[in-house]
Image (cartoon, rainbow, N blue to C red; front, side, top):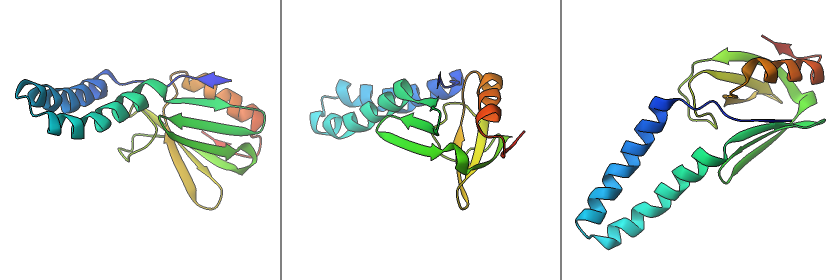
Length: 131
């Protein structure tokens, strides 16, 4: 079951301004070498923004954000709780879920349909503490 990410509008604006303005200024001043250096970062940010998502299969939680991917066995999930952490993560919103799994590992995600996501996890991870 696939879950789209929640996307904070203000975060999108910050990313657009943070990447778009410098790139526009570089293009305007015709510094093509600088544009070539900035373009991969711009493409990376766009890739992450458009491809982030979460899939719960019968055996694992798959998290994808651009070229980055995590596969978390459902049986290893120990706890899920709400978080407002600003730590870098595959979440496009600060209304996040912290998923603790394995031996001290954790990941922050932000599914748009949080309630439905948590209900599916409760069904598939009966031993986990899901708040």
